Image (cartoon, rainbow, N blue to C red):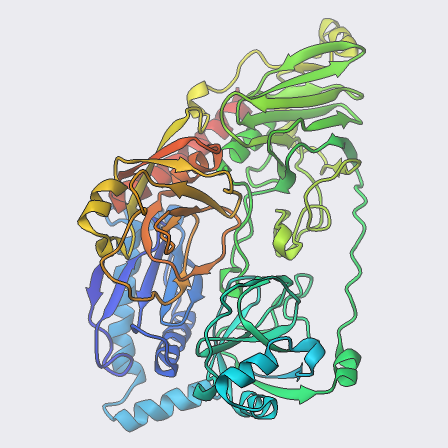
Length: 620
């Protein structure tokens, strides 16, 4: 693992050094402490406030956690700022200079002065008062928890409402606050068997923390009450009630008061496309609307989402002349079928799903990786792929649905994006934005001669004679090599597991999904580590390879959580994440180690190749 020890500012971290290490190829994590505590919380928040007031070039997002602050970096932007240093090294050098300045500029030689400065800074944070109903109907675990702690339920409620809490981080689900400050008398382990359904607003205790579920979800915390407040409102300018650094207090309310305070249920807006383009006749296993994803929301617990295979989405958009971030369809096998309500320019990329189009009883195989002009009334049906898993259909102009936190990507768990925040259903109508001059430039490939027009009246589509090279297609083999850099906990692996990590075939399990690629090792018991020390949760990124207690790795994908507490043994590099998204159940992958600097060079080269391709198609 590329890890750098940086001497810390004396007043921020007097007893140890900073530890800074990569979080994949597009982020750096700064570790301020080794264990969860209010002291660690203050250090993280102090560092965050410093970086908010002294912006580092190329840092586009910060994700605070219990003991760490992760900086997400813009590799492409940084490549233009420094011709010699790697993007990560460029950010690191800025950070080192700033930390040295921080020590001299913001803190006097007096420890008392430093402590007073920290107190004044904390007083500037937001304080939230949260009503909670602790009555039995809303507190299914309160009585059992009180008994196990040898307290009365009244004592549990009193102790829970007397403390002041601090939001250390948001994660697990969008807006979920992890609160420090729980009275030690209330500390209790998670439930042995997690519930399949915990309601939104549920207030729980797990270990030495308390927290609130913003969304209905599975969960293993001890539920001692419920708040009527909405913690996650994606339609608001600030989508989460809490932010890391906030102070929180609870107060008890009756059931009647809880119901009175309950927020009105948001009325879902009906999606009425202004330019109806296509109608869904059959969805297959799963079809969703996805763009490049939503950015800038990780600190609120909102995942990036977006296309699982960003390569295929980008190429589909380029082929029809779209901006490459436009929304398109992401389709799993199972017989997806769509009919076109007007002549439409599309492109099909991704998995090798044989597609056929029918019009006037004429059926033709639809070519992929090239612009295709579909005829109004034609039906397109996708068959199961010969290889790969996910296919993409881009429409000229891009799919037009309401933006949700700056993106049209569907994230079902939080009801974000797409049509009503859900997967597509039979009967849904897809609308598209108006064509742009770039779309019109692609249309020039279709000769408007009388012969072509005559053919279009009979055939279901016209296609260009050229297509992109098949080598651009991701995930076309049953065994795929994924290049990785070492993770922060790689050195904790046993020597046998270290050797097995690179080169051993790992089988893809059927329960893999958009959240993660679940793998099975060949060795009995999976990979093992030399230490049983529990990891403190911190930020994770697309491609992060986590190692749960069962020893079977998970590669995080588009809909993965923003923070995680499993050891991180590797990171799939950004340019290979699309390959991971295309492997199927019972396929095999092999990890191959690569240097961080090389991973970032490949990232920059991919960006440049997309630019060259887009310019080439427009000027052809």
